[in-house]
Length: 493
Image (cartoon, rainbow, N blue to C red; front, side, top):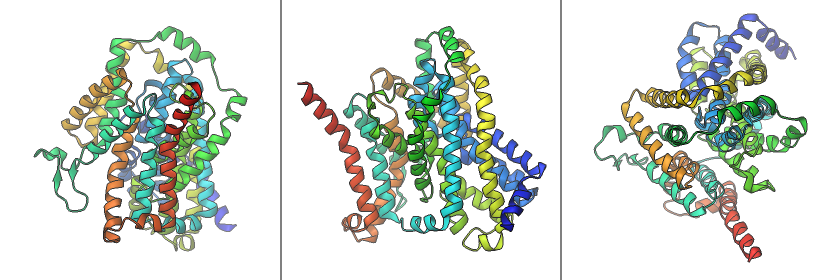
């Protein structure tokens, strides 16, 4: 009880609260800019914290982290430009809602889902961190491969009208993911003697190109009526009964995000796509997904924000970062003289509870800043297409270049944009390609590590309970849409 009181006392100092608020605003801004990921945001702000008190410095970074995950949904919904990889799934239905004049409603769903998902994951962190962390430790190469395979099986649900086209783009993503150094022996593959390709093709410029630049190319060809859209945006708001219908989706997706977040190596982007797929699978209106289904916004947003709390579980209890952002946070804690691990709760109990309360406040700030800001955010739709389209191109170029100060990434982005434009025109879905790019390296490296562990015996995946269950679920997930479509055709005929 005393450490809880100490935590409240620490957090209620005006300097600490102000720092958390500033961090959250910076995070939302960074998250909404294409190419500036949560990891980059936290890494950029990290040097600022070196001269601060430990509590103040860490809470500044937590504000940036939590705010940036939410911020990615803003441009994903409004202009089909995912600010972060985690918001790519949100763009599928969020942008469709914005085009239908429901931008205000989509942003409200995103804000509430993000805050609820993040808050519940922090509550899980507080209540069951040690137990969940012990379970996460059971994940080695076979289990991580099975998780990646499960994530990849979602392609069948993201394929849209044509399963064949979805599988083609998914395989394209896997093939692009093989470019670079072999993960086991370090031999260059498909680099064509270009130094820029030694580290592989960064999926963020490709994502920016496929989603944002392709949309800019398309808007140069045909623009929808801005005036009609503005009038509808002003009037249509989320009703209580509509939000109530989303609660089940938010809770399920929060559970998925928290679970995936605590597994080292898995991230918010994977959680968002898995939650989106599971929501679509449980929905009675599967055909509405991709056309402006509110659950298609609530699911990925609650899941990717739930990853924030989930990823903190192994970080604080075991000293193992759950994702790239928590790896930076691990460095920040150690710079401040704090060693995460089992003894952290004993040696720095008041600090831990201060961080817990700060995380809850950061999620509350998403609502306090996000909901009033929706009216301001939607003003981007007032910008004429003649101004907005070049602005999108500028954001795409800056976002791609800022990754590694490389013009090569800008070229990759433009090539992806041109390909994405033609993919849109001929109904090839972009999401399976991104999913293949994200999961390909994770799947390949863990497959090969598993085979090294078993000396080439593939039974290792089926003799370990967790990997066996995940592979079975992956097979069911992959073939369920195919069977459903076949049965529908049979009933029609």
